[in-house]
Amino acid sequence: MSVKFSNNAETTLSSGITSSATSITVADGSVFPSISGSEYFYVTLEDASANIEIVKVTAVSGNTLTVVRAQDGTSARTFSNGDKCELRLTAAGLNDVATQADTDTTYTVGDGGLTQNNFTDADHTKLDGIEANATADQTNAEIRAAVEAASDSNVFTDADHTKLNNAGTQSVVTTAPTSASGFANGHVWYVVS
Image (cartoon, rainbow, N blue to C red; front, side, top):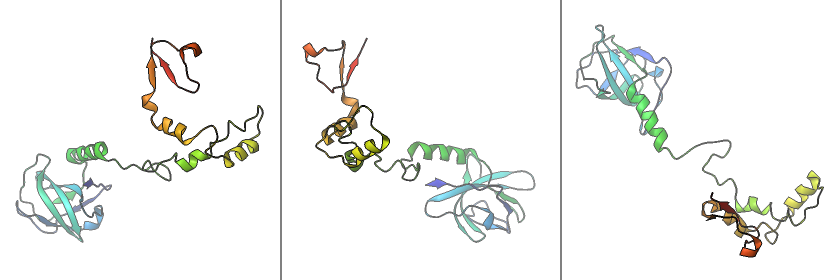
């Protein structure tokens, strides 16, 4: 479910409603957000005496709103033709946004979003061989050629790539090991003091 908003959406009731009505006819339904599926928004009904009721709009068809009455601590009441019907900022709307932000696991960042695997095995193969073909003063073109000619048989292998994926599993030691104590070349060690 997703709560929707629009700026300055205000209209009036085009006919009165009872406290049990679940369908409201307004003068201009086009001012409200378009919704579909489980989307919704909240509107505030206000009469001439400043009595209000917040309702949850679950469908819009032209100027007819399908609503769930008595939302956000308000009570269902009768309203008359010409009473206000406005999409206002409500606590219920803000709380729903916060809840959605906490539970939504789909994000969009850049051109591919966080749902894609940005560092793939295909990308990884481009790194293979950089160290094997390295010289002290390589130019950008030489580095690019080394990357483009990379293969899995060179220094940075798929097995090494897997170690990057499991970065949270490195060993923790209390003192830094020495080559005499079996310190393996290429391992990552953390020293805890």
